[in-house]
Image (tube, rainbow, N blue to C red; front, side, top):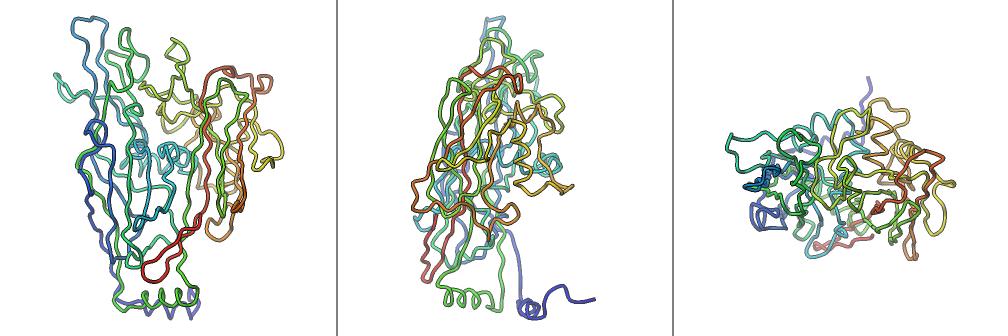
Length: 463
């Protein structure tokens, strides 16, 4: 049996002696609590210095504490309102996430981050992972409230959470970063307001309709995150071979290259499905563009219909035939809302070359992730109804689906780029009503950035 690696590679691997790995605990620079209920909207943490860290091991540990609303004394119709932990746990509560090194921004701090997480998590993470790893660590399934005691006054769930998946700079390749070569690296999180919380009504309403006289307003329920700390894996080599290799590459190439994705969100309020959203980016590689719709106003007094994403409300029931999860957060519930066809445009060039249907959008998701002939991959979307009613996030892919590092997407540097997502109503095609309902259209772009690390802890970011 031949060696699994070429002999010259095996030689260098054998020279790496004294390898060790450990996990480091990090504390926030500010308080150990955050969220509206704690009166703190921001969390900042710095990475270990003079260490080799694994970005993909970075994890936030905390306890989610929801605070509900008591019934109005003397009002027979008034019911208690329970605050639930949203689907996606910590990730669903992040409004903005940004990285910097020595005061230099490594990304554009996209907002709302919770929307980015919902799109990527729902379409790219398999159902098995959602119902195992994420269900254990980061509340991937919304559950009903269980009172702590018969005289419970908290009226909110308390759940231990760990988030170990962060989109953006932590997806860098290579994921092992020698912080000795960089200025101090800092991660800052802005937390969402109370409106992202799903709620539950007392007395048999379960996760469904409210009772008379209990219609909540934004801010009725609140949340806080307590006992917060971070963990990250650090590695070391005792023989100095890695340092020598880094010095050799910086001497020969001028810098060390670290490639990572960036995201940007654009939005517009619309009054009908015959509308569109536009934006523009300047980037060396535009990889993907996603489109989304969410209801921007209370539809009517029938609470069975989806309500505005900016109101606290019971979780929205997922489409018939779904598997895995039953309920979705209203804040990240994306639906066709009467859409029959759509089309993306980049500098007036159409993508695809024809108007795509709502169901065809899921086929684009599948093929762009290179899983057409792979039988061990999938998403969390279990039916066509679930796709159209809860997770409608069509996209176009402009780069090779199997390699995110070496094969680029569309080069838009030094170009006045304009990106559009146009939607059209076609009741004959799919017989869906709702084309005249108010909505918010969102467009998410994913592009590749390059961080070049030079001598003397110098760096430059090429967007």
